Length: 175
Image (cartoon, rainbow, N blue to C red; front, side, top):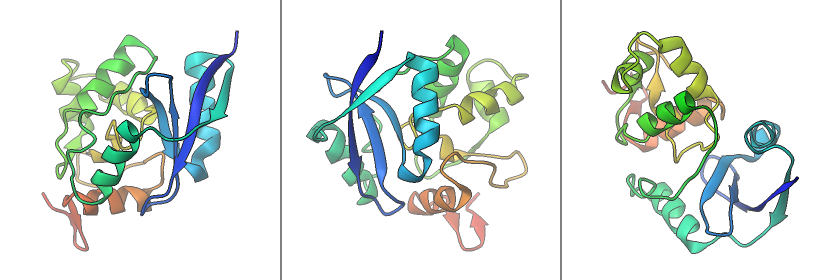
């Protein structure tokens, strides 16, 4: 059976954002337009066959996103989301939402937070499978040596987001 979700786009300073949400305005996926294939792949993996129906973006989603880009960095903290995935992935994604804006954590710190200190690689894989960019702030995770590591939206976008949040300057991370 095909699952049906609403679909809308929103321009942002880092490119067009694609949003997938349900009838209750709960965000199911968020990615960037230049990564549509990744978003569709993750949707199919998590929900099976999916049909996306163009819809107006509910203000309960649009307002916090615009506020975030206007500088209200905590505006996304209470945005309603729902994901599938393994229990471990959901645990990692819940942990990501605990990283405050303006800070960065290593994969090791995130692994320790969720009670799996030896699962650093698995945390990295779960981080990379995050279907909710920005809202589940995987861009705030960096390498243990302070370097930027991969980001599904691209490293330039990750730099911009960290700079927007005050965690990055021309000199690099503000540790």
